[in-house]
Amino acid sequence: MWFVAIAGVIVIAGAAAICIWHVSRTLHTAKEEVRAEHELQVVIRPYNPETQTRFEPINSPAVYVEATQFQDHFFVVGPAGLLEYDMRGSLRKQYAAGRDLPSSPLIAVAVGVLGDSHEAELLIATADDGILAFNGQSFRQIFPENADVRAITSILPTAAGHLLIGTKKRGVLLYDGRQLVPLHSTLKDLYVTALAGSEPDLWIGTIDRGVAHYHAGQTDWFAEQDGLPDSQVLSLAIECGRTYVGTAMGVAVFDDGKFSRTLGRGVLATSLLAAQEQLFVGTEDEGILDVPLRGRSNTRSGTSAVSLERTGELLEVKQIFKSDESVFVLTRNGLYRMGRRDVGWQSVLQTDAAVLTDRNISALAADESGRMWVGYFDRGLDVIDSNGARARHIEDEHVFCVNRILRDPQSGNVDVATANGLIRFDADANQQQLLTHADGLIADHVTDVAFYRGGLALATPAGLTFLDSSGARSMYAFHGLVNNRVYALAVSGDELVAGTLGGLSVLDKGAVQVNYTTASGLAHNWITSVVAVDDGWMVGTYGAGVLALDHSGHFHRFSKTDEGYEVNPNAMLVTHHHVFAGSLGKGLYVYERESGRWFAITRGLPSLNVTALALSHDYLYVGTDNGLVRIPEQELHP
Image 1 (cartoon, helix red, strand yellow):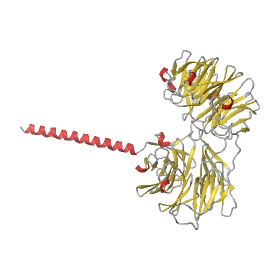
Image 2 (cartoon, one colour):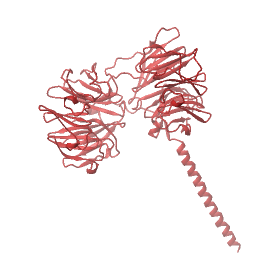
Image 3 (cartoon, one colour):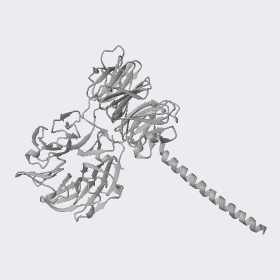
Image 4 (cartoon, one colour):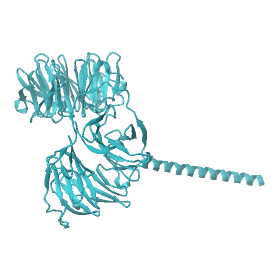
């Protein structure tokens, strides 16, 4: 019987071991799940630009966002990249976005010593590619794997070697040199606009929830009902236990974490600097305001009898900071300094004149003389000389938001589709005619224009308008269009293809012949661009990449586009050798007509948001929301 007892003990012990193993495994799995939820995946790696590209930038205006001093030089960041100036304001080196740095605008800069480094580094936040750390010689990249985590808005190094990171969707994060984690559960899922303070005593500005004060492991919230002038916080400053919160409607003052009063009601406070008995307030269009803090009332009425004194006519102020005994002001286009003995603000940086008026490009077209017409989202258009040295700028209440530029090869005239009508220019870029709803258009907002049957076809959010010698006539869903919101047009002979929000309409001699939607083989109803290729069409969509439509009415998908991406409105171009498609955030897609394959280009672009394309003298011009570049078409390769 003894062996039976022993066997029973063995069975019980085995069962217990299995039970313990299961419990241990369950606990381990739960622990890993908690850790995975708390810890965000991040890759730390050296950043080495790939092989130099042949993309050549067209000189765009400098746009500055933040600046700091590092290793006795000024470093300024902006959409174009990182600029290094000596203390006399001479440009020493430029690290361009898309060439030396990732193809992502730079949005913040600070100096700090992180836990995984033994030296001070320049810490640079990008809009889409994480954090870059620069020691003066080389870059390394702190790259979160989740795209939401990479949507950074602000950074704040701490004395403990940590980096606090504000984001658009994930609130406040902390990087300690090894891992990236949420700072606190009360600070998750926020759109952060500004950070100030320290790790144990932190102020957080948000886009629509006011300001948060995180201290001693808890968070206090302040919004308009608590005295804040506005729930949109734009800037923060801390001085001697007092916190200043800049909003779109004034500056709130907090003493020891409690709301005290409001300064400068109605002022859009884009930046703040508190220094001794002065508060410098940077604004969008009122310059720098000096708020004297002496003699202030301690009442909590929310008002202040202190007047604001204008100290400069510096517009679009981005940042105010102090170094040594000088106050520096960074505006959209310059850096200015005022020392203790200076009278007025002195310009610090020496910059070259730009050819282009703006960086946010929406349309491109080349004319026969080699001039490039460049349309902007909100700055009208430029006509660049054939030598590329200078441009003529055209902007008024109608030539403002440009959607498409179409050149007539016979007359040399140019039609410009805008949000305020169709403007017609002669070959010398002189405005000849303005057409709006009052002249027969179905809507003022013209999204695309194409030559069709001896006249013009205009796309609008209300349908189509046809212009010819007989006048204007319009059609919309009542006449058979698949949807009224028309974004793109393409023509081949008597056929006109209209891409809309709700599908694709094919017209023959001005009448709708067939409509295509997802119910009839179309992968996505929202059509953003269409081009004629051989005896068929290529259709750009908002979400399903590019599709091919053959003459028999069948759609075909390409292997490269199976992953899906958004094609920007009218950002497609056909040449003898290629079809190009500009994407939203994924670069330039290139189709080789001979081989029938697609590939994507990201290196060399100032932004992965490609918005416009044109060909001139064998050069491909690529417009983005962050500038214009060009490259010989034959130099394009995977």
